[in-house]
Image (cartoon, rainbow, N blue to C red):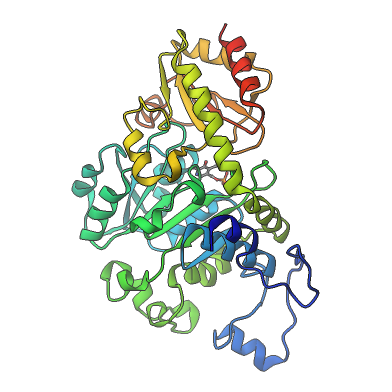
Length: 420
Ligand SMILES: *Cc1c(COP(=O)(O)O)cnc(C)c1O
């Protein structure tokens, strides 16, 4: 089936009530047929609903639909994108281990990897996403995961996915891409051999800034890379917290299953059924919206590129972009999503421009139907030191735009007035 059909139907069997719209199963728990049924569910002899911290029928439709769009074997929803990223790390790394992360990542991912997980004894080693060969020198036997973004937020770099995967596969290390900005519509990293993708579904998935959410998707046959691989002994040895279950012996997508059975069970960052329902509504028109976001962002990037006050425009959809060849290789139909950034002379000028727009709202979000202007150095990246700002590619004069779905000419006029 084609993408637009999957976006509307995948993962949903109209239930006994025949409802066209996916119902919101707003419940905490589920009745078992009897105690034996309950015991079978807990022992994974049968699969079924136990408690909404572990699974929920509305969330299940969302997970299946998202996995279908991303081209993965299975997915697991979380309460936010940050929860998804943390669980992807915590599912493989523990004290004494290290992970390798692109320098150009979302601010929350930078603080998570640079500070918070350090307190759990997990070390992060950074590489420049524009030079994947740096990964080679960072790998050792304790390396558990390589994390990067397919399009970076906010420096707007495009990853050379094949180059990263080649090094990771050579060392049998799992790769995880944050595909939030590209969305499954524009980029399908799992088809390029990436093992896991994570998304903040708070962004383009709802598409209207309606609900927080995150998701982890795992590729088909991931067990082949994990079974017998000493790096991932947790999956190959009996899990004492789950009466000796060996994940790599199961004929089920094992990475997301372990997030569910161990991490959601113990850490509890589960999505609310209502938020999953909002995400399902968003997916229905995600393919249509991404076309419009991309077309409008390209027109705005071309306008900014020609403007005398603009020093530099970062948008890989531009023919002049040094990364244009990467979107031709990895992205669909030349689309490059709705996120772009541009640089003006100074921090003061950037703040003045952000304060002067009328349609573009000063907000720290992306992927909304409503256009957004952000000054990263004073907001999303404020907690980063001057050194971290430079290495994350966020100079003081940088402005980020999330181009929404308003009329393109109105958005250009708004920027023209603010730049005057
Ligand atoms: C927003 C965002 C996140 C964090 O997601 P939340 O849902 O806000 O927790 C992670 N990665 C990227 C690329 C994002 O844009």
